[in-house]
Amino acid sequence: QSALTQPRSVSGSPGQSVTMSCTGTSSDVGGNNYVSWYQHQPGKAPKFMIYDVTKRPSGVPDRFSGSKSGNTASLTISGLQAEDEADYYCCSYVGSNTWVFGGGTKLTVL
Amino acid sequence: EVQLLESGGGLVQPGGSLRLSCAASGFTFSRCVMRWVRQAPGKGLEWVSTISDSGDSTYFAESVKGRFTISRDNSKNTLYLQMNSLRAEDTAIYYCTKAEPGVYGFHIWGQGTMVTVSS
Picture (spheres, rainbow over the protein chains, first blue to last red):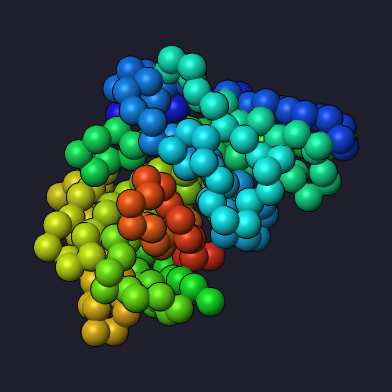
C-alpha cells in the first residue's frame, strides 16, 4: 500500500484561506468516505482534526473543513491564524483493518 | 482527562528486540480499539498495528508483519508492542493511539517514544 500524496508545503497569510490536497487511489481515498486529517506541531502529539471526510471532532474550530472529489481529498483552513502553522497529514482507511497516511504537508503562516 | 503515555524506546542494534508500553488513563481502556503509528525521521506517519478491545484480533502493516506483536493487558490499562528482528528502517517515533467507537480515525495520540536501530 503506497502512501497518499500530499504537497510538501503550502503557505498563506493570516486571515486568508488555504487548501491542501491528498491524492490516493480508488482502493483508498476514492473507495470509501473514511478520510481523516491530523495536525502535528513540533513537540506535541498529533491532533485529530477531521474524520469521515467532512466531520469535525468536538473542539476543532469550524475554520477547518474537509472535502473529497474522486481520489483526492482536501483540507481547507479559513481565517488562517499563526497557531495553525503545523504539519498536516491525511489518512484513509483501506479496508481489512489497514490504514494509509500521506507524507504530510507543512503549512507556513506568513 | 484522556492520557496515553508511551515508554520503552531506546537504542537497539539491528536484529535486536524492544518492547514498547503505553499506559492509558482517563477512559475505559477495555472498551477501546488501540493502534500504534510511527514516524521515521523526516518522513510521514505510518500505521503499524491495531488490536481489538478484547485483544482477540490483531492487524499489522506489511512492513512489520511477522516481526512485531501487539498485545494488551486490560487489567493494567496497558498496550504493548513487541518488536523483534529490528531493522534500521524501524527507526522512528512510535505513537500509541486510541480509537473512538464508530469513528474511523486515530482519535487520541500519546507523545510518542523514540526507537533507534543502529550499530
